[in-house]
Image (cartoon, rainbow, N blue to C red):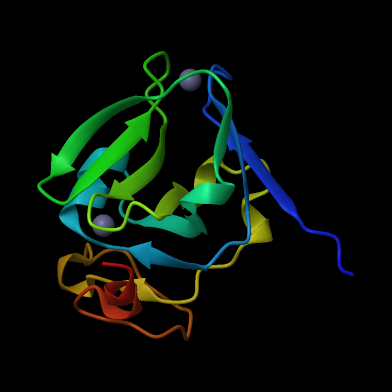
Length: 139
Ligand SMILES: [Zn+2]
Ligand SMILES: [Zn+2]
């Protein structure tokens, strides 16, 4: 039996802590909503079954970032930790940068490249999609 890996993470100030298991996939999102909500040129995330995700410290604040989704963040420091698609409540997208070990899960593809910021040069060889790509199966 292989030991099940537990992924832990949290916000910058430490008020929010979480853990999750069994990542489903991971990718980079170049959409404007992710750019604006994170303040970064691209958002890297990992999808977990919501059933394996638990908040081990604190309660995140949350808001609707579109008709289709909500984003969880720390009210104290502002770190965005997760995206929840309201159409697929059984999955949660965790911001990879909030993991204690962000190198533990590697993004597998890029989505919404139509809004990629031109000065961001992508040098990897991962699949690239102008729409939601493989993430479509999640919604
Ligand atoms: Zn915080
Ligand atoms: Zn996005």
